[in-house]
Length: 161
Image (cartoon, one colour):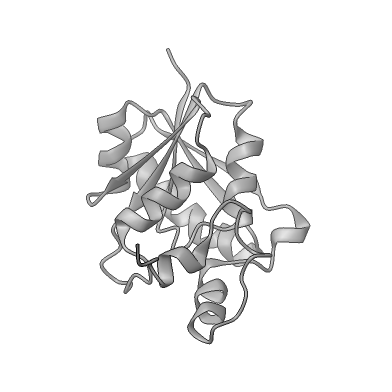
């Protein structure tokens, strides 16, 4: 059996914390599928295609990482891609309480998928997509919060040929 993990999230945008979780988890799994979920309760800052392109750029050439969008339940996505693990990053104790509740519901609904939690590195604890979006809304520089090869400005102001 291949050890396939889904790392689900909205990734709006993908941050250094997200990248760190994937890179650190690569030794645990044969493949990590970053699943960009369509969250109806949130208004996206970047389109699904933009997020897909950003994240694919971060892991270009890495055969262990795949990026896909999905719009159904995360457990249904896991079932569809053959994943037996769901990878989640934890920044704070409140993240743990929230993720624990979701993991327990997922365990009832799809027992063959095990949730795996990884702690965020201390230097990434304060970084979250909401803060990055707020900095972007006011024209701030987010280069210290996103992977170096994500050129956010290219997605905000498309280049004219």
